[in-house]
Length: 298
Length: 272
Image (tube, rainbow over all chains, first blue to last red; front, side, top):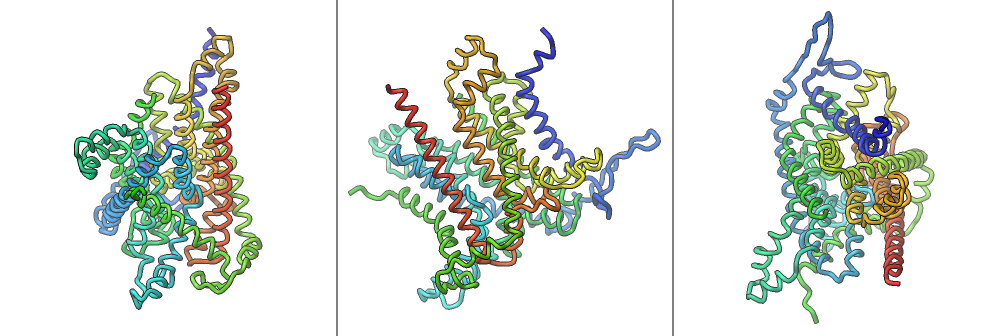
């Protein structure tokens, strides 16, 4: 058979997305890695070359200065720690609110389930930016919450809520809640109800049944949902920028500032590389869950 | 009467939490006052001002065009990848492809944006193309991350598809390509439409990646909104938000209604 004919079909189906992703997903990361070892310069583009090939000599200049800077300047590691802490707390908040919601949807009559899921998903289709912006009006000193509390007489002076970590938590929980509910719902709806009935018939309290049966059996969804919230929350830029204050120094915001305001591309690249290194474990966890889920379905 | 369970209370509380801020935006978009939080009477005047703001209108047009092209490209790449993921034999190539396609789902946006910008700069340096960043580079960036979502939606549909019809078509002598377009595509069309709509709204919504990948002349709507929101709350943005909320709800409702009708029809056809 003609080798070109064999190349058609299957290889094309594989080749086109493969090349696209290699070009626009894998290669960019290689460039970020390369750039994180270069030196900033006043030039266009604003960095010095890492490789040079002059007089048959290949010279490679690796500058570890950017990484040393990340270690020396406390601002950077404070930003990493703050991001991890805030993402973790917000993920827990999402889980505490999302789990009962997903459970209630999974237990609702079958014909209501698609409607309830649509209701949960609908906000995430409208602009993320605008939904975060809505909270600016609610949480500000002259905003609805403060006005309401003053009207009730609970407080006399407005409480500072906007531009604090509290506002960032609200923002992340609000923005990512649907991504927590969906994977939880997917595992909870498959849960065998007879196990729970059996447990209660045998005299288990409902809390005990939850800890011993419902939670362990839905662990896959808990992990997937938590990772879907935690990973993007660590790198979040919009929420700390609009709702956060000076202490909500999250790494996404710092990276943005290094890149756009200080125009230090090498430092921005090394910030990104360290962020990825921190996220390797949760990303692998998510991928493992996903590939297992796909094999179960098949 | 049945006791209201804890999870049901949380469900209603959660839905209230999700919808109250949007409802407040809608109500305050009709506020006469320039102060967003003080109600001083009903007035649609901010809508009038919105439709005279040329910067916003041109950004809407740029965003819609980019979203249309990105969603189309994302469906093409995503569907091909989904086909490889569900129908091809296990191999290292398939494994790397499925890892690469799902990675943008969880990748922090700042990293994706930064890396794509550096790629474009490097390409311009090496081949002299793209000469400047603009709609084309935003299109490439959006197609790449939207393809991930399409791949997930389409592959879950492909996995539950009854393969006997495709096999029958192939046995009767249809080429793989013909089988794909005449049998597979019609059967997965709800997933294709859902993937396209999802990509369209993701692209329309994206601020971070677009900010990195765009250049002069390709300012998208989220970029305009972001720069005006940074300065504080503005009633014009409330009006814009209301229009977006209603447009999205309408599209979501219509797509839900049509898929449900298609499902009911299919069910009836099966029964008779």
